[in-house]
Amino acid sequence: MYHMTSGSPLKILIRFSLPMLLSMVFQQLYNVVDSIIAGQCINVNALAAIGASYPVTTLFLSIATGASAGCSIVIAQFFGARMMVKVKTSIYTAMTALTVLSVLLTIAGLLSCGGLLSLIHTPASIFDDAASYLKIYILGLLFLFLYNAANAIYNGLGDSKTPLYFLIFSSVFNVALDLIFVNIFHMGVAGLAWATLTAQGLAAALSVFLLIFRIRRIRLPHHHTAPVWNWRLLLSMTRIAIPSICQQSFISVGIFMIQGVVNACGSAAVAAFSAALKISTFMIMVMNTLPNALSSYASQNIGAGRLTRVSQGMRAALGLSETIVLFLNLIVFIFGKNILGLFVSADNKEVIRLGIKYLYTVAPFYTLVGVKNCCDSILRGGGAMKPFMIGTFTDLLIRVGFAYGAFGLLGFGSICWAYPAGWVIGAPLCFFFYRKGYWKNHMLFKTQHS
Image (tube, rainbow, N blue to C red; front, side):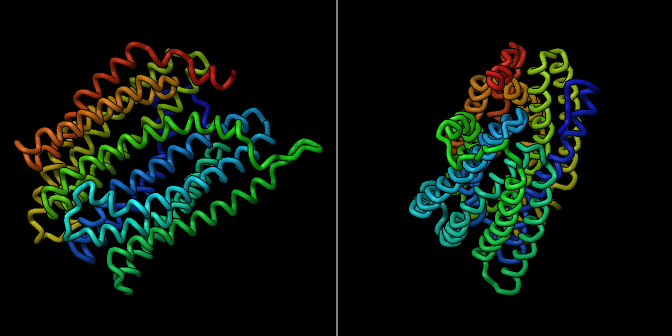
């Protein structure tokens, strides 16, 4: 673990964010490779089918990620305090609770799968493939939750390398299975889903097995045993997990609601939005590795009472972020069509045209994303969850409202401008909260020592 309360903020942020960037790259490979193989090895309708199910799969992933984050924070606090009995009990409680949650969501997901796709007006031409992909994905929710929980626990115990190794393994294995199931066994869209389920299932099993091995090696004080369940610990995890789930889910809900407008534009628009959104999401995730590092940096320095260093870190992060934005814009405007060509063949000119229209519209506004994410990170690091949630929810409302409100006038253009519309309002609002100093309340520090 890095100690961030001394030294150059710029160097610390660069050093801390690089491993997170590498992890993010491999994590995003799941979605990107599925889409590339779908568009190139099957057909454009297969790409559209995966795109139609994407908002729902992202929602489940958000729940898994947010719930695991709550567990990780509680476990990390006990581990730092050398309270090893509670460390073990927290791990047992977390794994049990998340297993039960994943089973309940699997049942609910299978029952509502068709209804969710109908709710967002999935075109009839891709409905069956989208439903098939989504049902298989939902069958693997247990693996998704266990995989994310184990990785979050590793991070809570101060081990960031093991999650990276499992990410690399599962991503590479997923790519290999994609090619085998599609090109050799000709399983179509369902093959892509089974590949993801198989790769994540194996990674989850190995990750949990290694976690159990390490838990058994944790030595407890003499005559002490660790209970396998504790309601109070579960409540502590839930109090942190629920806001984390909400933060993650707002993004997924926005995609889900906007997908309803996209689907009304036809299969070409769905395929174009699917490919362009994955490219844009990948770029924004690249930008987010720095704010994620900034959040940890801010939390440590706020807890230490070194508020000046927080402001210094903010300035360093903004400078780095805008440099990254400039680089990403150059990639979009120089290589945008080539990147889209990875998803669909060149003869799908309408898909390429709409995809480029989306990318050319949103890319210049990444500069606002950088500002908003850095401000959000400071607020989150200081435990100022209320202003953080206000900024995030405002962005969501404007984004969805613009997509639906301007659709009659702009058509597909309303989807392209929906995201910038949210950023134009959300970024200044979050910057206002940062400047007001809500992050100076030391809320995380008080929580950890109360």
